[in-house]
Length: 343
Image (tube, rainbow, N blue to C red; front, side, top):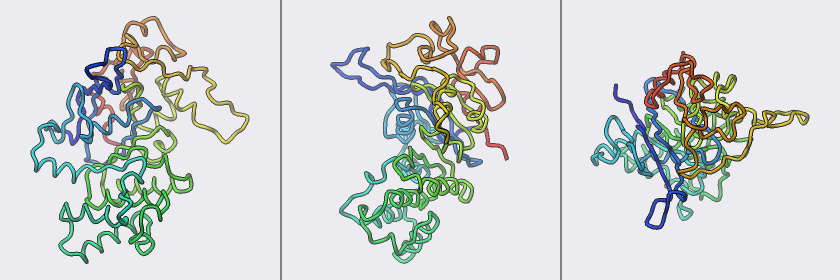
């Protein structure tokens, strides 16, 4: 079955040019494959530390960055070969919420402009009154009062209000998929729950799937159905979000879970003793497992071979030789491992 949006063996390398050499190249994604279905709707979290390739993956799936190798397919068609009509449909069916909402706004326009533009371009309303009604209804859905929001300039609103307007903007066109790149990382803690609830509501009430990109496992666990853990552009663990967070299998995922602060001043962080240095990200840095230099469970095989994904359980996979007794998967099987969320 053709998947809605698919990355197929995508590699993205930065630093290529006339004056570059192999040691100056950075591999942001390496032979990465992931298919996203929108029926039934689900929320897939992409997690990892800074430099793991999360945002590069998002930009590649959105067509904002072209893969160095591999392809991104929208409804079975390479993004680079979309017709004008197909691209118009893609822009309607796939929306994005960026990390910093302020950069999306033009400071010379009121916030009405970012809401009116998609209505006009997508022809979502037949009259000005209908457009206004659509905007007001959508703002109320994300917890904003139209009389306190419309007519104001971006600097007159809080960061939480600006981000909720971006959620409303994405909702206006009723997309099939929203890519949310660190949508609450620049918002006060008091407003994160509100925005996260808005994102969850998109799936539960409107049938919209989400790719939720974050470094924060706590929020990923709160709203997601399944999770993919990235390390240096590779998927190192994937599966049901509850299993991945509560019982992490890959040493790197354990490191991430161990980094979650607890409300106990006597509880030391990072008790596993794993090195925190992500090491050299250049294209020629390693021949074996990319996590070997930080791993407390490193074995001899890790220095010479890169581990494939092993299917450790139904809807669970980990790229670690600790599980070499389990069947090895190709990267293209990752979407099948995630499957549909239970219930």
